[in-house]
Length: 216
Image 1 (tube, rainbow, N blue to C red):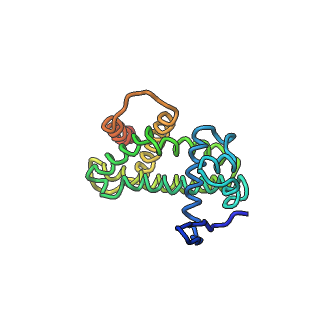
Image 2: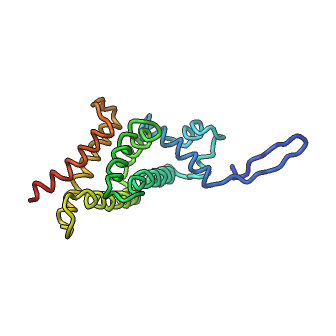
């Protein structure tokens, strides 16, 4: 049985240093995310995570006793990454256009590592969540956070200030999230369609304003 203790040797002295369990879990989950992205859910195992993470055999089993526990650990890590990435687009008031540009930048980063592997792993887990209510609940919580932030963006770039039409905002946010989901899926699957941050930014704005025009 492995423990959280690691041996640290200094010339003439042998001591034991207590490792950080949370840090070790993050390291293992990052390795598992890379495996999911490359080989899909069927290519994931505790031993393969050990080998990918460069840790002794049995380490992943020590921290995640079952495959289900490992999958939930990966999902939790992906949720944290998702929230960090999406909320970064709203660190400043989206009304000045900063939020829109930052969101477009986040979308473009999906084509680069580590975002690309995280996105592919997320898509794999999304399929598995159809048969796992607890896994699905975690992703649903993230989706609700996305919707809330999308509504902030919609309100922030409205051409006319005044009373907020909640029905319209909800529809705009829904269509925007659908557009972003399609963009994410395409980028994650190697779409070669030319795109730049400015291109994505214009499309996001067009989606939001287009729904408003149809609503009128």
